[in-house]
Length: 367
Image 1: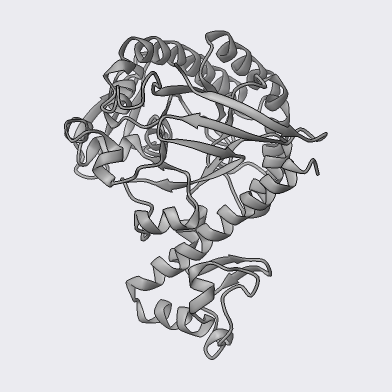
Image 2: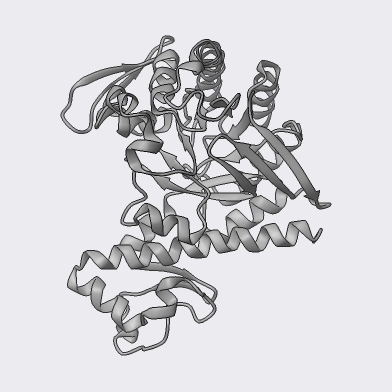
């Protein structure tokens, strides 16, 4: 049995409050998913993620394939057991990471040959291989292998990318359906199975986005993602592409917007009808001293915080804001202490997760 998705409440602009029933967890939507690139959400232990209310996190297929290797993780019972994470998990296909290796890759109809950023070794990813890696990792949700379009991209480039993505989506789905019973935890959750989402591409061309969505829906994936955005295009254009695609996607399946964004953006996308979002921004910004607060963005490195004994965010009840001052967080940053990244990241993740909790309550109330 594939996933169950229940829509509990809807609003006139399209927002919806739902529940996504996965093998490891029933996830409340709309949801923000912290990114755990190499089997860890950087600087934050798993028990702290649980305390913050994270229900689902991401794993990165490309990085885990290179190190420690999907076969090794599979032999140890899958990614959940390897990283000691009992809740839900999603793995990307590796397509975006391969896309980012523009100087080290060669794309063909069969797949992508690329060189490892670690040691320069040569590797070849096909849709089938991406599925094999993700099945071995065993996340609740896997993603079809896709080809991401850069911005700006002319129409010819976007059409060719879409051709590959649609062909690879079919190959991914066929191979996944034939082999998903090999997932490491299979049998532990009754008839619950691993799930596969298709990814809508098409660059910034409305008709290509519509074509991509319609063809993926015909293939009948377990859920649908909107990919290839937040790659440099103006925010207004991002909004246009999302608004073009969302009404086409099935109402009874989850909608996942990949790789976005700032807190006000994820709130806006949730109110448009997006169910799932992820982004490295809260963790990456934290490591550089940028905190998201109810008063706006705060660069904790600023001299004005040197003797500021107030909490990072007076309106936040996270463990960091309950205990530590702005002056102390600034001191940790300037001293190069590793605790700095941990505390900053905990706060930023709490802010993102609390933002989604507030939005869920609002949507449930019909506002």
